[in-house]
Length: 474
Image: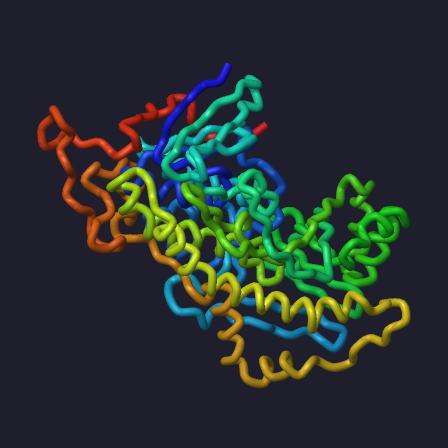
């Protein structure tokens, strides 16, 4: 049986971009439904960095104090171990603002925090176990989605004035829309696995680069989240050599971890990240917008993917909240403004990643570590960073803040005390400027001055879901 529902904005994907967008639109008084494919956020995420620009955004939203209470590690510099010695690449203490660090936080905790903050807003709905299987169309316009309840097995139609695909690099929304991204070649894939961490191990993060070998380790408290780079397309052949080959390689690269590599029992302990670097030429269509990895899959270089996706979400809410509030839908011109705003910082970062791929990672991974001579000195750019430490603030700013950080619009900002309470319904984006103070409410026909309700599109309404709650962990 097909069940029909309505909302003003359907957000597909409950990752960082989707949850931030849902929270901001709900604070604008716009009816928004987030569809998340899984039952909870408890998955083994690989990129759990929250950069300074996103930490500032959380402060603006009144969530900074709650975020600070989450279990986390803080990274205030990036140090790499090379064959020619150890070098510091970035010094985050040189960043402006209150946050001179990168937070390493399990992404499920971050997403739970955003969901909890959004769920106090009466216009927000989060539907879990909701897998999008197609788009609804009226002529050439996207008018919502079809999704399947993965528990009940039932299929539903959700009609929406705007559908936003935030469902990642393998976006089902993008595929259903028939949009194909431009792909830039990448030289590597990444194996991810866990190894035990001890109290006397280095804190924060470790980067180890050698000829033919690259490894990154992220401090998770009682374990290391390890990433080992391999040449693109060699996963099957390398696995055929047995798990002993990975143990040997990793122990040779990081000898102080040699007594722990036996914890890798089988290849089931090692997950492959198929690295992509892609970008859509056009991020939108009538009634449809794609942001985050759905619009531009990022390389792991710099760990900036999450924060770029969050910035996309903030810009989307700021630019589209006013027309959504007025009419319950947006024009192609409105959607084009989002892409114009976010295209150039995305293209700039991807260009930098491509340069690193070509000049550093590609050449190094192509070398045979068994025959290539180890480098005895530091490369010139790294020597300059050591000779003039002030230069370390440049890569720190590019990575931790980015070329175009986005800030919460005034109508979405809260104090820490009020962030756990729903916003007054008079808090809506102004029509003169998306960053202007909230405009005065309009009385609902048949009611008094306080009888105000958010625009839901086509006169529809979705009741506040009584089943939304923070998932239990088992």
